[in-house]
Image (cartoon, rainbow, N blue to C red; front, side, top):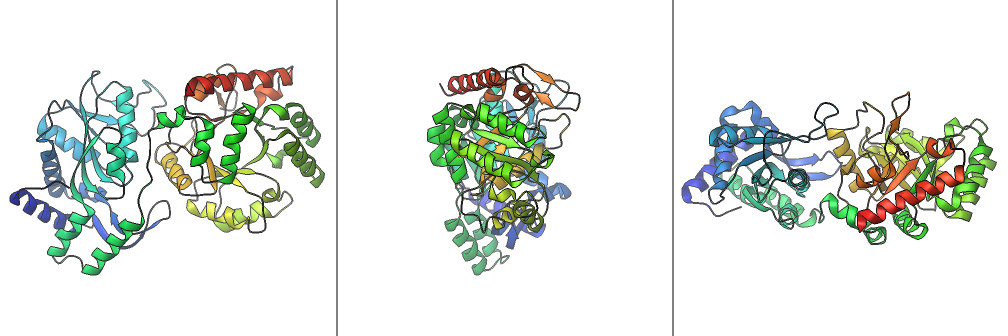
Length: 474
């Protein structure tokens, strides 16, 4: 928070009290959307129900621009900051841009709405900064369109490392409040107690956001370096396996006969890093099949992924994972999981491993490759948040470069040597296009299993994917 004049200081104190009284600032015991406890919670979305306070906040926030020149565009980080950015745009007569949370699936396919030209200087408006990831994601999209971004104006800096993360990427951060300053205003106004101040201050000392980088750094960093950033043992193994075998190929063995899967694994095992199964479609499943599959995985050094897509409450997925006829936890190195149930689904799977000594990993589904899938926008970002805070998760299943974490692996399904689709909505992209869109590990299924020469086709996919990865990191 900047040093302010006496008049500005009084204005901020009054505004802090007003925000507290409409429950935009809350103190107590809260749980964030990713399951973390916090003694302080900011919900500035409520200001849309209090237009006078919203207008006042926008006016004060724009005072941070007094020493900034040549501002030609304003962009509010979606969604909470959009009303503030709109008011600032109207009051200052400076055009506004809207950064979409997901690419339009029709029409122009734009990520930025509004009129602009390359070189325009755009200032970012944000409500609360914790890690800075939302601002950095917005900055990256704007810069890809040729816009310059030098400054961000923020209502509240939570003092958890976000300011440093943003400034490390060449963006100045100006905030009306820090948590420390906000606490001081509210304490002086007898709105909170000294104990609340101590609890929040202690919390800030214990919990700092990790250093983050823009997505382009993830794409440019080699696997052997990213392995050191991984929290999950299977993730580390997979990074090193891809580097050692010079392969980023995950083969989807969506076959219904056990022997067909075993023959396929025996043929292409030396050239893949993951064999992905849907075990519930195997008509003659038995323990001998699992035993042989594990032997082949060990012989040819690849991992086994059961594409179960767990999606139930914690207790249920725990049972689904370890019980029943499949006993997935006993043999699958990796499983896939929907984020729809929230953090509890990860906790449930972890509970299902209490009798398993070998390391296990999860790939969290953030996006799907089927046409019209609902896994986008906030859903995708919430899935990423859960993944980044768990040592069980080794990667994200998605179609595009939507996360920054160097230690997580992007798994992208729907890969074929040529763009195409099937009759059931599955959409395919080429090896080079998926790698350029962030894929570290690419899923190929029918492109190989239905080929006339399976081994030759496997080698073709392997070589094209690896060449694209080397080009991406060059």
